[in-house]
Image (cartoon, rainbow, N blue to C red):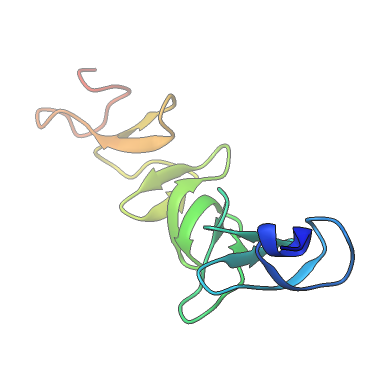
Length: 113
């Protein structure tokens, strides 16, 4: 068994594990490597075998338009990355998300204030 086979390369352009140009079935291509799945901050488009990097404003993503988390300074709210929180929501800086204010508040700075 060749070294390239153990790296999952069907085709390669050199002797290192980052010189793959085509992967065996069941593996995905990312920056010259064959991996079992796309790395963090990348996604696999439908019907594709090559991972794509998440784009701004996404930090992590499920697809080109579906963020799982947002770039620094933005807040994830109902599938979108926002610069400011919507009315009735507060910024959870620790999680990088927007969370609902108490039902007794129109605006707030935390869950109970």
